[in-house]
Structures are given as C-alpha cells and as structure tokens.
Amino acid sequence: MIFFYLKGPFHEFLAKKRLEGKIIGFVPTMGALHQGHISLINAAKQSCDLVVCSIFVNPTQFNNLQDLEKYPRTLDSDSKMLEQAGCDVLFAPEVSEMYTAKELELKALGQEDKSWMEGKNVSFGTLDKVMEGAQRPGHFNGVAQVVSKLFRIVRPHKAFFGQKDFQQLAIIKSMVNQLLINVEIIPCPILREPDGLAMSSRNVRLTPEQRKIVPAISQLLFKIKELQATHSPAQLKTIVSEQFARQTEMKLAYFEIVDGETLTSVNDFNQHKEVVACIAVEIGSLRLIDNVVLK
Ligand code: AMP
Image (tube, rainbow, N blue to C red; front, side, top):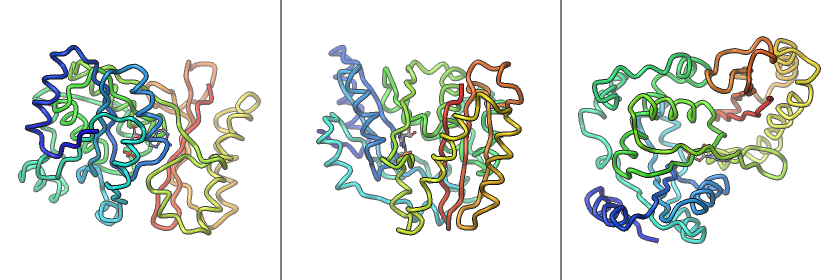
C-alpha cells in the first residue's frame, strides 16, 4: 500500500493510473477504522482496479470542539488494517493541506463556508434541515465541503459510503447531482457487532457499562421493523418514546420515520416507495446513530 499525505505527489500518482485506464474506487473515512470501514474497502475492491482510502478527521464537520479533540486517532493500526484488506492507497492529509487559513478562520467564527458550491446555489431542501441537520448546525456543510474537496483531489470513478450515515449519503448524492461531479456513489450496508450494535469509531469511547446497554438501540429498531406491518408511523414513534421514557442512561435525541429519498416525515407507509427509521441517542457525552430500512 502506498501512503500519501501531500496532494502534489498523490495527484501525479493518480494521473498516471488514470492514463493507464484504471478504475479508481474511493472510500473516505475519519479513521479509527473498524470492520464497517473495511466492508467499504472490500466493496470497492470488487468493482475497481485501484482502491484509495482517505483518513482525515475533518474539523469543519464538528460542531462540538470536545468531540473533535476526543475523536480517536489511530493511524498506525488503521494503515495495518488497510494493508491487510488489500487497499492500494492511503491518503491521510494534514488539516493545512485541506484547508486555507481563511476557511479555518470562518469555521472558528462559527460561519459556514459555502465556497465548495463553486458559485452555484446548491440547496439540499429538507435533507440538511431534519434529524442530524437540525441538531448539529453546520455539520452537513462541513461534510459537503470536505467531500467535495476530496472528490476534486482523488477524482474517483466510484465512491463508497455506508448506509449507517443515511442522511450523509443523501446529502452526498444530492451534492454530486447538483455540482455535476462525475462520480458514481455506491451505498453499502451497515455492519453490526454480533449483538446488533452498529459499528462506529465512537464505540471505543463507551464505558463497559454503557457498552452493555447500547445494543438496546438496534434491538428496538429491529422490533420496529417487525411491527411496521401492523402499526402506523405515529404508533411506532410512541412505542420508541415510551421505551426511552422508561430508562435513564440513554436519552433519545430523535426517532424519525422518513422517506428514503427526500427524508421528509412519513405518515402513511403506503404513500412511499422507500421508508427508513432513523434514531440518534445520547449516552454520556457520546452520540450514537443508527437506522433500519422499513420498506
Ligand atoms: P467515518 O469514518 O465514521 O466518517 O465513516 C466513513 C465511512 O464508513 C462512511 O461512509 C460511513 O457511513 C461508513 N461506515 C461507518 N460505520 C459503518 C458501519 N457500521 N457499516 C458500514 N459502513 C460504515
């Protein structure tokens, strides 16, 4: 595996591969890799000639400085995992390679830098206003900002994203469509621990006690999926809020049943082609998200 941390030599390397006609697959991550990330690498390997993974803890998508500082950084073990998985290239740039001082200043002032829109009036409609978007101001602007930069650097043919971050996936698809970026976005299924907990880099920060409790989140989602055939969205929401009202360790940030494409709230299953139940839960200072496709 070849490791780049500077754009210049990375550009040169990729230009050569493109000339050779290689199909470039791209897996953007923030590191602290687990099998969920590796499943994206595997998916990329299946349909691409060259697999590029990026590891970059993106400061502009954090709306909580403490969360950014505490985000696990494990580059050594990450690169070993990628090597073992057969990833061809790791790009792990410094913040100064990705952002100008001006862009970082705007972030520090709490302002959203929209220059990634390249002068176009990109609008996400409901996509960035609900769920994570409503509760984490500026988060999706930071995601779009960094992913558009990474797409410009890597210029992949295909990019692989986990359905674990369902809303993020919808935002990326919308951004690519509106900016006419020539990349195929490939959604990949959620990888779970044996007890159902969705794998996440943040899971390592759970205390042993919290780790015992959190599988209840996915178990509840699976139960909701079962009940979907006989209950309305409103009834399912009541079941979830009652469940959380009964326990004190975890706090429900939201539970939403949304249209899989527009992310608007679903009142009647029959009126939608794809429906997804999305949940966010706070436990201590951690925030965990998960989702399940209901229809
Ligand atoms: P992150 O490092 O958390 O930014 O995630 C990088 C990519 O891995 C994103 O596309 C995530 O959706 C994906 N991902 C994270 N956790 C999982 C998981 N449990 N299963 C599948 N994909 C995942």
